[in-house]
Each structure stands twice: as structure tokens, then as C-alpha cells.
Image (cartoon, rainbow over all chains, first blue to last red; front, side, top):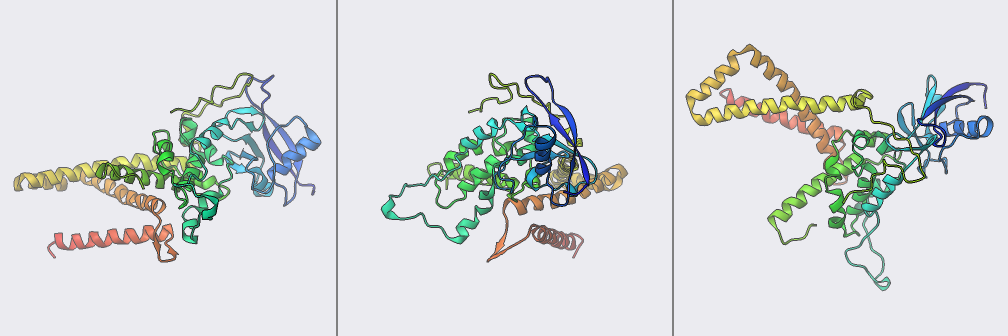
Length: 248
Length: 140
């Protein structure tokens, strides 16, 4: 480490003693390779062992270390200190209840994710003897982007709709529902759309688009939501014209 | 089918819930731009209503149409208002095509049309159609 120093103002909250979060400022050495997560690890290791935060892979894959850095939702393992002019503020991911310091309660997201059934539900179950569910590269391309989601919840922290209305299913859950809806091997669109197409689903979204801006994996949840809106409208029109026909 | 309200901490937990700022849209530039986009849509509505008024006037006959035209050309306030509205209608035709590029991305064979090209192409089409209509309505 070089002698360059950076001030980090970090949110602290101890549910046993505090009635509201406060901040604490630490000074950490850094060089060109230091990321915010390294700085937090340095604090915990060298300065204050009580600082609490989540992390795991430190390579942008696990999605555990999401925090608001200078007010912007970021994966702290991929956010370099060298990119910031002055001091840095590290807060827990916005729009989620704070459990302790930088750790948020993600039960709501987990619950919502389950409700969109983000797994393959084939139209007809094939026996093992019948072989694999085959797919062409073109069919893969239809959903591939959306399968890159790592459930880091940065999109929820960026979404003002979710900030105001916690009923909203939210960007990642809908994007993952869309991922399976667009999968040629899947047949549970109608079932998923009972949730995705409802008032707390896509129709709550006003297309601010910040979810797609902050996504570290370049998934475009805003696009997924708008496409589900269109698909839902087309389904409604189809069921109006062909009341007995099933949705696609 | 409503999810459990997670904003009420589970028993044994004392989660802190930060109130969401009422003026959230002033906190970040993209939020502000979003609000500008939403609010200026009002001008599109006014513009459309004014046009609808003209269409109704046509259906009522020549006198009504001439009265509508006179209103449109004689009132300075209305002219300025219409220019203002026209500006936002053009602005929203761009935001509309931007959304269109996201909602139904265009492919030509293996080539995926980038959103900027989608918007430019569609705006070009708008200008072309407007030019044709303008040519005929101004007497050829």
C-alpha cells in the first residue's frame, strides 16, 4: 500500500443501542488497486472490528457487497477508491431496512423472487429417455442477457418506485421472470404473469430506467419490464379476440 | 396476493427503516430528468386536445373550421402556446422512439439495430411524412 490516504464516512447502526443510524469516519491507505471493499476490510482488520457488512467473492459474481457509495448503488468490490476526488460516503443499500451497519434486510427481495418462479417449468415434462430440451443459439439469445442477473439488488436501491411503494415486485424479480418467460424450453408464462402482469408487477413501473444504469452485469431490467408490459397487453388483446385460445 | 410487509421488522429484530424523501426527484439528475419527461407530457395532451378541437370543427362544416383557424392564427398567446407544445411534442416523439427501441428491439437478419439508429430512422420517417403532408396541404 502507498501512503495515499482516503477518508471513508461509513453508516453505523447497532440495533441494540442505537435508535437511528449514525456515521463514523475512518482514514484508510490506498493505491490504484484498492476497492471500497478492500478499504472496509482494512477498517475491520486494523481499526474497528465491530464494523459489519456483507461480502463474499470480491470479484463481482456473488452480488453480496452492494452498498450505496456516494449515494450511488455499487458493488463495492468493483468500485475503486482512485475514481473518487474527495472523501467517500459508504451507506447500506438504499430502500432496504438496515439490520446493522452496512447490512440490509433482504427478505422482501427473496420473497418476491420466489413469487415469480424463476426456474424452468416445461410445458410438458420429458422423460430422461426422450433426451435434452434442445435450444438454438437464437433462442438462447432471446433471454441470455437477463440470465446474467446476480441478485445483488442494486436495481432496487436505484428504483424510486420501489422506494415509495414496497409492493412493487421490482426490477430484478421481473427481469428474472422475463428470462424464463422468454426461454423456449419454458411453458409457465401464464402462471408467472399472474404476478408479473398484476398491479404490483410491471404496471407499477414508470420507466425511470435507473435500474439498468446501475446494473453491474449490464442486464437491462427496464427493458425486461417494458417488454413484459407489451407482452401482457398483447395477451389481453388475444384473449379478448380468441376467448377460448390460450395465451402463447 | 400481497407479500408480507417487510417494513415491519420481524420479532426480535430492530431494523431501521429510513423514510423515503418526499422530494426524491430533486435528489438525483436522472430522477429530475424523468420528472421533466413526465410533466412535459401535459403539453402533448394539450396539443392533442387542440388538434381534436380542429377535427371536430371540420366535421361541423366550413364556418366552424374557419372560426377554429381564425382562433389559431389570430391569438398571439395561442400561437406561442402552440409553438411551445409543438416543441414538447417533438421532444416526446424522441422519448417515445427511445422507449420503442427498448421495448421491441429491431433486427435485420443478424444485425441488431442499435437504439440510436432506431430513433434516428424513425425520426427521419416522421420528418418525411410531415414533409409529404406539408407539400400537399400547402397546395402541391
